[in-house]
Amino acid sequence: MNPNDNIYRQELMDIYKNPVHKGALSDPSAISHKKNPMCGDEMDLYLKIEDGVIKDASYTESACVVSVIASEILLEKVIGKKVEAINKMTKDEFLTDLGLNLSTSRVKCAMLVFEAVKEALEKYAGK
Amino acid sequence: MKLNAEELKKDFPILKRKIYDHEIVYLDNAASSQKPQVVIDAIADYYSNHNANVHRGLHTLSEEATELYENARKTVADFIGAVPQEVIFTKGATESLNRVAINWALHNLGKDDIILTTDFEHHSNLIPWQEKARIVGAKLEFVEADEKGEVSAKQFKDKFEEFGTRIKLAAVTHASNVLGTILPVKEICKIAKEYGAKVSVDGAQAIPHLNVNVQSLGCDFYSFSGHKMLGPMGIGVLWIKRDLLEGLEPYEFGGGMIDEVSFDAATWAAAPEKFEAGTPNVEGALGLATAIEYLEKIGMDNIREHEIELNMVLLNELQKIKEVRILGPLDPTKRTGLVSFALDGLHAHDIAAVLSGLGIAVRSGHHCAMPYHVKKGFSATTRASYYLYNTQEDIEALIAGIKEAIKTFS
Ligand SMILES: Cc1ncc(COP(=O)(O)O)c(C=O)c1O
Image 1 (cartoon, rainbow over the protein chains, first blue to last red):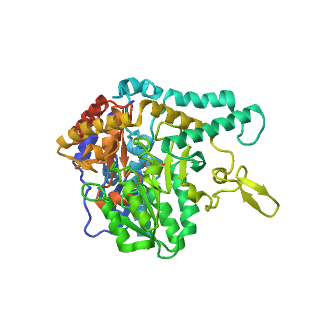
Image 2 (tube, rainbow over the protein chains, first blue to last red; image 1 turned 90 degrees about the vertical axis):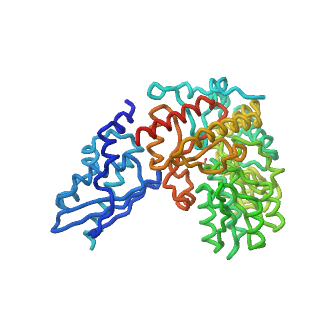
Image 3 (cartoon, rainbow over the protein chains, first blue to last red; image 1 turned 120 degrees about the horizontal axis):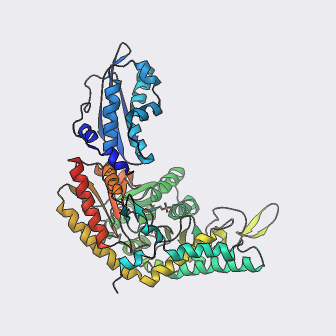
């Protein structure tokens, strides 16, 4: 199957065109910056954490559709969850959840936000 | 004579492939070209009929393999206006450039010496110099592309006037893999010579498309890969000017590169063997020589003319799309057969993905020229690059695909 039929389908394009988690947080508890050197995607990720719970999360990016959609879906899931629960989330769980059936080169695009969240949490823990 | 791209396509078996029911439109030639049947056959013929180690045996197969290998060297030498002794086989442009850095720069540069280069080099023609400069305490100085994506000989002259004989090496690309720009290498060599500096040229993007004669260019080192010019992967060339061969130390040591060996020391064979330790890539050299013969039959001037025509069509059409920003010169004669561009509000990755779904292969990313992209504020660009088998229809398919991508995302 042509993978594009999957990625560029209408409901995903709606997410891409109307992102709700895009933008910086004014008073974040942790920030991370991630880059994919192969394709040039870049992202800043912001987390607001209170009492061990992720209260808010957002991102700014210069990135492709897959990366943006993955960010929207992941952050939607992360907000309101315990830090502990997100720490436990594995790469495979994340990709299965996403359900995008991505080709190898595009898995990297989706992984950008996942790695950014993990890094921000590590930074937070290290504080 | 005008070449017939539609006919030439038939020489390349891979171009008969379908991608999701679409005819393949291969526009990623600057990354690697496809191979004609004659090249594939030459490699198969070598292993089917002549394979043995070279320079090692008296038996028939070894002699045949040696002769084929040395004939391949001669074919390469003739193609670039050199003598066979000056042609060293490597695994590609990257290795060739690293050899210049290790064999020449490391031994001939000192503290505060300068390597002059440009701000849009491929990482393979930047990092080897950075690394060696760091070791010996030398510096890099950059000639910057102007707003048209061009550089002039005058800019190089200005640098030489500013830094004088501190500049020991100019390391420049012959044609840019990002901008497509062809550099005035001959003039650069002339200026460098006045100051006693050496010139190393990265020919990876030039030699597939232009008539290259290393003598008339006047450079000291010329590097290129076989796989971008219809040859196989894993073979490339480092051309070293004859006067320098004697003074350069070998790069690797082992079999095939010695004159005499005792338990304590060894002396070296003459070039090119001195620089080719170990069993060489014979099949690669043969494949490259066969590719060169194929290119010569078509004629480099005809290929050039064809690519300028495609440049004209693509540049014209791209300029009509308001979201498009083109990198490099708008004059189709000032670039090789490639155009990189950015689309406002659309990531290069997504364009490439939509095009891929239509069977069109382009490259997206920073094309191994990250500093230039960062400097110009592009996170990534899309690059279409063509060759002798690409038709006007291929370019039209690309334009239609770009328009479809814009529609999908807006
Ligand atoms: C200008 C330039 N220099 C050097 C290289 C490196 O060539 P290779 O990867 O074949 O060693 C390339 C290939 O991408 C190139 O475009």
